[in-house]
Length: 310
Ligand SMILES: O=C(O)CCC(=O)C(=O)O
Ligand SMILES: [Fe+2]
Image (cartoon, rainbow, N blue to C red; front, side, top):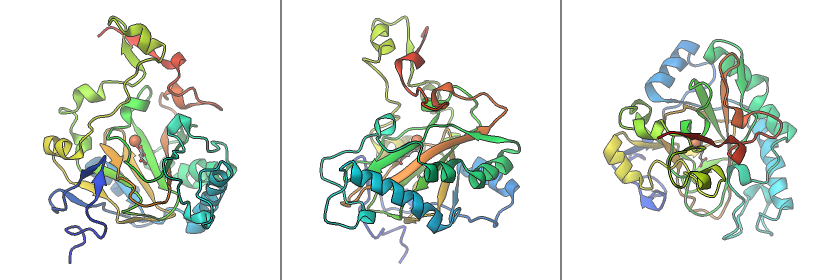
C-alpha cells in the first residue's frame, strides 16, 4: 500500500484541520544525502522545489548531544512530566515552553552553537552560496507539546530586512514521526510571488504611520503576527501544490528552505515535546537583517518597529 495515500497516523491535522490523504494533495518530501548531489544540483533543487531535505547531514550522535543538553534544561525548568526517561521529553498538559523570543532554552549552549553555526554547516552554506557564509545569531527554538502546529507563513516577513538570498535550516532535535508534528510545507509555494505579493511585501515590525493606531503598533501594543492563513485546506485550494512532510524526520537530518516557501507544522497528537530549531544563513557580503544579529539580538522589540506611509 502506498503510505502517501493512507498515512500510518491518519488523519493528519494542521491547525486543527484534517489534511487530505489524496496523493494529489498530500505527500512526502524528496530527500537527498551528503555526497549524492553536486552543489549545482542542490542549487537547482532549491530553485525548483524551494527546499533541500538532507538526510544524515550530521552524525546522529552529534545531534543527540545537543538534544541531551536541551532536554536537561527542559527538565531543570520543570517542563518535563516526571517519571519518564528524560529523552522521551513527555510534556505536561497545558504547560507551554514558549515560542521564539519567549523560549527559555539557552541560546548560547556550546554544543548547540557548534551544531548550528560550526564548520560543518558553514562550509555547506559557503559552497551552496558560492562565498563566505554567515548566519543570524538568533536560534529559534521549537518546543511544542500536544496541540496545534505552527501558523502557516513564509519566513520573509520576519527576517526580510537584509538580503532575500537567505535560507532556513530546520533541524529536528529528535526523531519526529507524524504524530509529533514536524515541518509541513506547501509544494511549489515559493513560486507564487504574484498570488502572495501583498503578503510578501509586509514585515511584522513595520506599521502604517499614517493610520490611527500607529502609536499602538510603535509601542508594541498591537502587532501583525505574520500568519498567512489559518486554514491549510483553503490555502492549498488557492495556491495549489501538495502539502509535504517527512514520515520520520531523524536526528542528523536538516531541511533547508527559502524565504518564500509557505510552511507550518503538523499538529502534535502525541504526549511528547517536539524539539527542533530553525536558523538562518546567507552570504557574509550581503546586507543582513539587524533584528537577528548580536549577542542578544533585538528581534521584534519596539526599537525595531518602523513606520511607513501606506
Ligand atoms: O518548527 C516549526 O513548527 C516551524 C518552523 C519554522 O517556521 C521555520 O523553520 O521557519
Ligand atoms: Fe518559518
